[in-house]
Length: 227
Image (cartoon, rainbow, N blue to C red):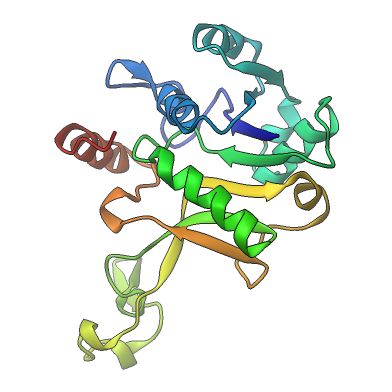
């Protein structure tokens, strides 16, 4: 049995209420729900939230609702804590189930991304599978600005090296994590050899944390039919 769990806290700090903010005439979370349904993989699609008001959205889009403790919405808790809370308080058959944690702000995610994640989980037997993409610019050339002063993150040695000679670096896109229930409960998701990834094209890998991110995602979503 495959389960999709969508963690969606009611209050967001960087973009106010971003999980439920309207994106192309629908709440943002709708697009993740739609993508999950399009895969035809899941026996259950569940939204885990800290606010009972979200139950109305779940009813509208015909998915299950799970009310989690408000404590789990604090910054000191991670996604794995939220997933474990659901598993430990649900009636799912824990020995056979696989759970995909799908993030609520991922309108550029496609059904095949999720399907390929499950295929890799079964094929490789890695503990976790996640979605990743490459940085569009070498991280060796990154710098921070503090008190109007520029400080190279990796020092000045890479400043004069052409970008073409620097290797690609990658990041988590914040789209999904696949794992067996046993691994969700007993292992820790880390970026190491216990995990594997599905590569998302850079143009379609957008984590939405700022209003600039939101605008970029709107422009991509509007201009390129990805579904």
